[in-house]
Amino acid sequence: MNDRATFKKTPGWLDWHRAPSKPEFTPPPGAVDAHCHVFGPGGEFPFAPERKYTPCDASAERLFALRDQLGFSRNVIVQATCHGTDNRALIDAIAKSNARARGVASVRPNISDEELQALDAAGIRGVRFNFVKRLADAPPRDPLVKLANRIAPLGWHIVIYFEAEDLPELYDFFASLPTPVVVDHMGRPDISKPLDGPEFELFIRLMRENENFWSKVTCPERLSSQGPPHYDDVAPFARWVVEEFPDRVLWGTDWPHPNLKSHMPDDAWLVDFIPKIATTPQLQHKLLVDNPMRLYWPEEHKGEAQ
Ligand code: 0GY
Image (tube, rainbow, N blue to C red; front, side, top):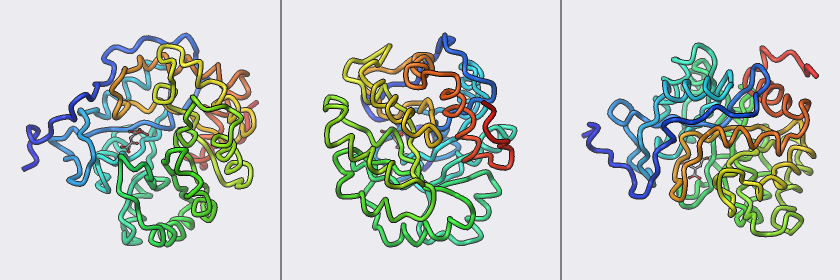
């Protein structure tokens, strides 16, 4: 049974903000929200049986309304674990976007070449490997390496999600991946630890030693101890990454903010965080326009405008 009543959201889960305000910061024309999700609606696109949480519905229409409200032009929609490897909700959202969205899918390692080509035609440009233990069972690595070698000729990249404490064990595997690799949320640093301590230094080393690595400077609302609305304690971590790797950073809202239980941000607060971490118009343009266009719409990318 996959009727709507089957899906009761996980207790404690907060719904996305119903009336986000207008940010004070105006993104440059053509800005891309490069990390966001769609969930369901469950009655139409059922959640995966193996999921670790059940979200509230979060439709493509609401995502595109938020894009316009925040002053953005495009979205990169990332498959979340609650939909497993069933990418139908994601593909449907891209199809409704009027060519203003592209996606990152989750796929079975034994997916056929024909299926990969169909995903490419539908606007998928990468696959996501999830190593966050509360979200997914640890994926076996050999099949992931084989899959990575199969997607490389498509010009796709890999998005990885993990927590900082697991990086020492995952480091060599990640460094062996053959495609561009995008790290979600700066590898989820524990920001109560020092900025220049060994944990964040290891993430910086990963970025320094592997020029195919990119980072999303996202999710202050998840990482902050200080909390909303300013998330100032996260800013030095993200600013370091933006300033040292200006051509390999992406930004996104993470709407509809899965698994947040303490507070739900007004998405405008997240946009107003951008000038704290990308402190010049040049850095902002790279973060919000040039970099995501190079990765997701390379056929339209005209080179650096600044
Ligand atoms: C995120 C964060 C989370 C969830 C997922 O795929 C997912 O389920 O990514 C999280 O709970 O930290 O990137 O949106």
